[in-house]
Length: 313
Length: 233
Image 1 (cartoon, rainbow over the protein chains, first blue to last red):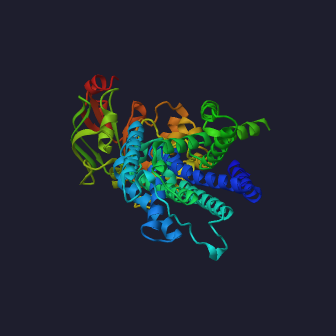
Image 2: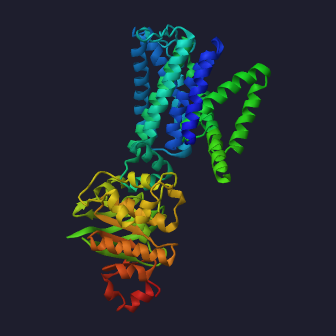
Image 3: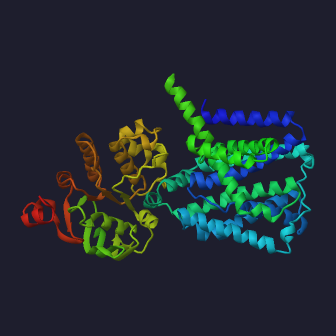
């Protein structure tokens, strides 16, 4: 059995067991992990597979969250149509921004995505229609009574978030393993070689950018439902920075790594803040140690461990 | 009619005028070798043909159609497969995946995965190995196979024998000879004079950014001024 399948099975069993045996706080934590996992996997498609390290990914997360809130409270849409609007809004923004930013590389791409993220934040912060710095409430969770789920119940909502995280993994994994995904990896390793093979690099990068935004928008829509509230905080650059750290800690270019990263970072954050007021210092120390000693993040360390054991036997 | 016609090609790196009004033609079928000393402008000429040099001018036509204004991917899709000096294997993709990224359905040239595996059996044996784990010779085979799968009409190879062992060079040479007999047109840049002239029907000699000699391969050795002055032989 491959490490990938074993890791996936362990994650599913751990999530299922936590859901079955945890109380209110545990289920809320699971929801937080599931949302962060979707957000981190979306960034992994961009940064890990395509080599587009973005510091503005919170823009799509925030637009998804605000799309969910606005579609419900301003347009009067139900939960599921509002989620579709949220995802579509994030994709539309990515399409407009992407046409310009996919032409840039390296530090220029990082800086322009940071700038775009800050522009979206500033616009939302000043927008009276979106509640300005007070944010927006009135968010409705989807009605899934037909399949026996009452999403206003924290247990059912946690299950909904976990299932969406699993489906997001399957969808992104399908993208990554498709010929399109393999070309994204090829572009990451050498744009000029990919071009010489007839690949319209900018079009492929734009495709990846829009797909990543769709899943970031989905994560944002779920985050809005979790809090029943959205605020410009969803769009700050620190949100982009945090999700990038989650991807790096978990292991870029693996999809499962960011899921591990989301779980580890969320649990550490909560556990450390319970025992010390200096929890951010220790969390930072953990990031430094992972980056220094775990080549390609925690999932990369697992891969190395497996290779060593295979070599020993 | 020539398959590739290059006329008055110029290319610059910053202020340095590296390719200066280069004109030559590659006939349909057969191998044309582009020879010259280091720094003669051969690689830059290839890059300018492919649109990989930002500042360039002049005319490049493929089967009569202009390709000089096109972006690199469009030149490739028009039928030019370029194998750079650095080989360019995608290290984290397997051999099969490296080949798959080049496939755009069966084209007029009819190259399929089975056909390239037939030409390079060693790639078939290593189809699930990572591109980064291949030897230099295997990597060269892989990039040539990948170029063929784009169903190109013209194969451009930049120093395919560089850094390879003599046995592997012979193997690559045999594959290129097979491709020649199958009618594939090839433009070959090579420092290995013996290898290039054994394969090529025509030779273009470059020196200091210009074409210094062009003609049939067998006539090249009759011109000691070119052999000594521009090839250092």
